[in-house]
Amino acid sequence: MIRLNGAAQEKDFLARIIEESGQNLSACIQCGKCSGGCPITSAEVGGPRRLIAEILYGSKRQALEDRTWWHCVACGTCMTRCPVEINVYRVATALCEMAEREGIAPSEPDIHLFEELFMKSVERHGRANELRVVAGFNLRTRRPFKDMGQALTLMRKGAISPGEMLKGSRADERISRVFARAQRKGTGE
Amino acid sequence: MKVSYYPGCSLESTGKGYDRSARAVCGALGVDLQEVREWVCCGSSAGLKMNRLLSTALSGVNLALLEKEEPSEVVAPCPFCYRRLASAQEEMRQDPKLKGEVQEVIEAELSGELQIHNLVDFLREKVGLEAIAARLKKPLAGLKVVPYYGCFMVKPGQVTGCENTENPTSMDEILAALGAEVLDWDFKTECCGAGLSLSKTEKVVELSGRLVREAAFRGADAVVVACQLCQANLDMRQGQAGIPIIYFTQLMGLAFGFAPSALGLNHHLVDPLALLKEKGLIG
Image 1 (cartoon, one colour):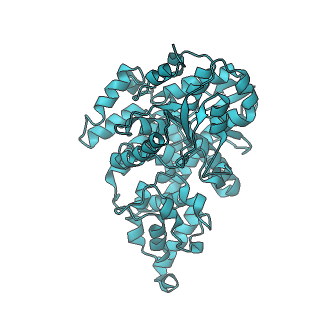
Image 2 (spheres, chains in turn purple, orange; image 1 turned 60 degrees about the vertical axis):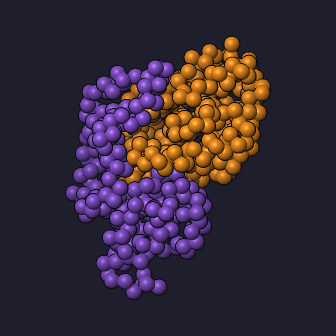
Image 3 (spheres, chains in turn cyan, blue; image 1 turned 60 degrees about the horizontal axis):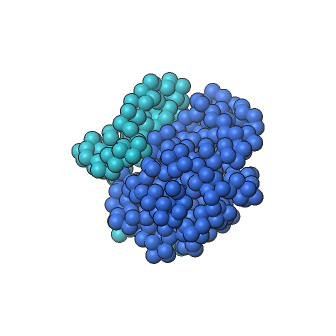
């Protein structure tokens, strides 16, 4: 197997992802049930089987730039069907944290932007302000009127109201502190 | 019966109908939902992916608040909030180092013994079908539905404890107890596209569209959901199918005699009111 002959750095990559994800990737038999059931695997997005193969072969750069873990919605189908019970969304977290630490540009900027705006909202207010996250995302991607027709219908029906965007504008310092402490620990300080 | 209630962020915004109908139905069944006021966001799928310690700590804040309540038991209508609370507690049980770090970050101790339920299983198991049937005023006769469970409430089974992740039946049983005609279909736990709705809209149109087309093919009048994200995706991204996407709690409320507006049934993009009128379920 190639993975046993890899350079020390590559073996170290596999060991670190195994440790940080808590998933025994060495037990993967590449059966492909994960990608078979995965909702986001497509011609463009390689899927979990391929992602795990990249990690096993020590292809660190390829794995950190793989679009699969950006697209992963944490549905849990792969783990449910995996014969050795690998939880791929835990692997996604380990890769995301490592890519961030090593300054690797997100291979899916839009998904990254949405997730970042969402977490910023939580960091400031303790809760996600959904409408503000949506509006912020549409503005930043320069499509301010995306889904506007449907949004107006929902407003007319009283399902949502623009005033909600102002809700929770007070900062929740309790949660800002949790963010600060967790991020400090995450960088090993 | 008293139990803590963790609604989550969406139920204050795009999922108000779910919150409203859940509270109405639980009230009618004698369940006293106690919302823990200082709850925080669980971080959702964004937090889960970006930072393990932070995501676990956010649920840690909620767990610490909820553990203090009596009884130490919570019901979460949002499947993601439910699964994140449960998985955070379980991961900390398996990994004492993580638990130690979380306790430092949140400056609180955790016992790790909170009982955590999703709303479907809570109503099916803890309240029970008999109590639900006993409350019935207006059976949903003639309404053909497919129950859609989505992912987070059932998968992965190792995390949720769900024994039949390909074919769960708890919501089917509740709907049957309400007198609805529950149709069989294969897409009960297929993914709707979840959090990609904004950033990869075309993917969600593909996945949600496929689900709704299958429901129509089976002859369903409506798809019944237990998740506000499933509801939003199937409602917004279904294309021209015109199939209403209704919360199971809204149907329970209707069968218990609540007015549609008290359940948020007037909030959906694909209007279910015309259908319910045609079936003689509302005036």
